[in-house]
Amino acid sequence: MNKAFVSEPEPAEPRCPTPNGCDSLGQRVTRKTLESQLSEDQIATLADKAYYCSSPGCLVAYFDDWGTAVPASALRTSAYPKDPEAPICPCFGVSAEEIRTNAEAGSRERIRELLEKAESHEARCETCSPSGESCVTEVRRLFLQHFQPK
Ligand SMILES: [Zn+2]
Image 1 (cartoon, rainbow, N blue to C red):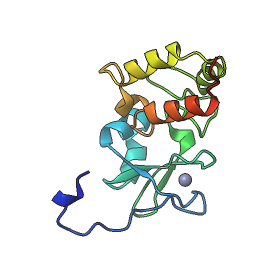
Image 2 (image 1 turned 90 degrees about the vertical axis):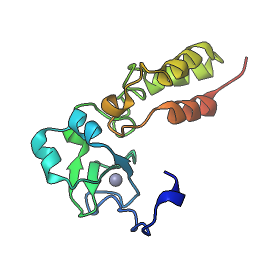
Image 3 (image 1 turned 30 degrees about the vertical axis):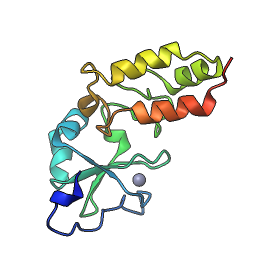
């Protein structure tokens, strides 16, 4: 977001509500993302502005400014890395394990292919991923962390 166009001072970003949550900052999610992941009843408990907590060990998925939280167990799509078995890229069902294996084998082709698809219109991150965000940053990070050039 371009801050130059925001006239009002922004209130402090809400944090993942404790004690169930982890007190970290969330990522703002759209209604479309919520509708893809939760039931109407669960969405109704959240305020208009809702956030996603991406912390691996945290059991909270969504929360709002008022301290309401919806647990990760309520999600339709299991979320990586809260669930380490869940696909890192839910749009194309690619696992973190597959990224690691390719990286350790020094093979770039599969990842290049995935990143191209993930940046194309075929990716539906807003409705496939609980965070509503593209997996590209996380895939790149994981790949580089394990990459062993041949
Ligand atoms: Zn949290």
